[in-house]
Amino acid sequence: MGTHLITGAGSGIGAAVARRLAGRGEQLWLLARDARRAKELRERFPGSRTLVGDLAEPERLSWAFGQQELPVELDSLLQVAGVVELGTVGELSAKVWQHTLAVNTVAPAELTRLLLPSLRQARGQVVFVNSGAGLRADAHWGAYAASKFALRALADALRAEEHAHGVRVTSVHPGRTATPMQEKVHAQEGKEYRPDAWIDPESVATTVLTALDLPRDAEITDLSVRPGH
Image (cartoon, rainbow, N blue to C red; front, side):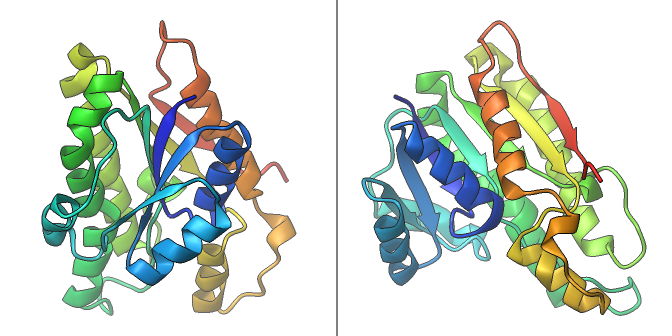
């Protein structure tokens, strides 16, 4: 049985990954933004443990974790949480850029830094659930794409740095997936939201588990997942 810390386990891809791992009898540590949310996650995933820390304030994560017990060994750190706000470069404020980069890039870097000792101890794996926008930036997606391009750079640098410690690093780039975030995107785009038109979160979860379950003689570095219809 492995030990896995998941961000974004409350919905969408993160919840699908958490369900699958819990179903296998794995030990889950779930990151929550506050104590109320942590209680909800523990009730939803019996037997799980929680850490409280706000990804929107990555500079406070070190202090927050210093007040809580951390896993001694961590087989995977699954970074799924993210935010999106569409708008042109001419429209988006500095506040939107800062919030997007904080949650999508700086917080994953800080979480990785704080949990590296536990990952090294288990020769574990970091999986960044990135986005197709981390490979290509389209109009209105500037802030989100910039944060995801940077997340890919973080993954590439981390992989090179941690190879000698036996820590594997994977970037998963899903296309549009039927999640609450996608529903919000459609609302911002003024389009009708049809979940059946997009990737099922369970399919992305399968991709994440494939990367985790790969024998130790190999490492999946980057995976792109696109809607099949």
